[in-house]
Image (cartoon, rainbow, N blue to C red; front, side, top):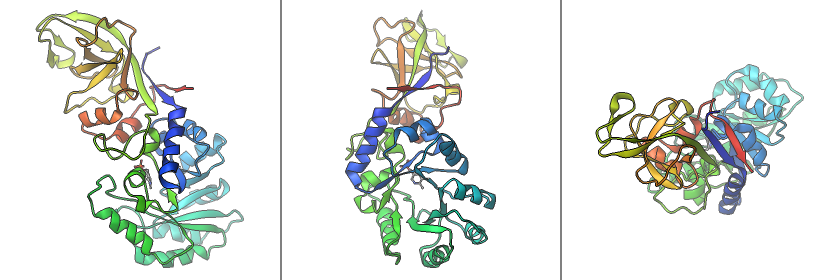
Length: 355
Ligand SMILES: *Cc1c(COP(=O)(O)O)cnc(C)c1O
């Protein structure tokens, strides 16, 4: 068996949820879309039994959860893409977000014994999905008149919450607060809203990335919550060799050894979802010590400079990110965001639960 896998830590996941509770006191819709940010959709849902609801991106994800016996309230963050999904949504007790006229019109044609809750998506400034605030009272009245619609809520999404100096977030908070629909539950904050903007907390918060132990506010700023990484990407040294001064390493011979030195080969590559393009230096951990990645990352392997790790041996565990090496740091060196790395792990990489 290849030695690469991602270990996922249930205690860390539950700890991060408890940090959300500590910060907000609001109801929590745990966001588990995109295969639980790469951690395993069903595993995340089963671990977060304490969440008040789960948020997914599609009916397919909602059905996967129901098929696994998950009884939580499940919110479809983009509602339905096709009217044919509506009977299934009702039967499976899913909660759609309605953001477009065509969805309203499809709902108006529905006759159903089953009832469902509905969130109305409000565009408070993200300019991606949602109704204009001025149109929301009419939309709420239309939806409220449908016999199968239970509770209504107002949901909006923050565009710039990671930028604590941006004026956009307060404008969005105010736009949601000003809607003259008392009694409707409201939700605005993603992870950055939860950690950076107490005024955005409202009735329901929707943490994603912070549940997985990644700060949306970046590595450098001090965070109000103590988050623990849930995923650690691991593999092993599959070869250790002494190379000579001048030896070129790997495809294209991009890296040339400046002296005689030990070089290790790690059994993980871009075929597993590890990034290939780096704009800065990046390291892995071997025996808890940093070993810089050198040469090009291959599909199944990468090479590391082992000069800093005395006695490194074939079989030694290697940590690519997670425990002791924040995924934020790897993402930064790769010129991307941690979300992308976590969601980008491929099918062939096994996930293993650590107890
Ligand atoms: C993905 C998503 C979230 C979670 O965002 P994070 O930045 O991961 O906390 C919240 N709300 C909506 C509508 C989303 O699509």
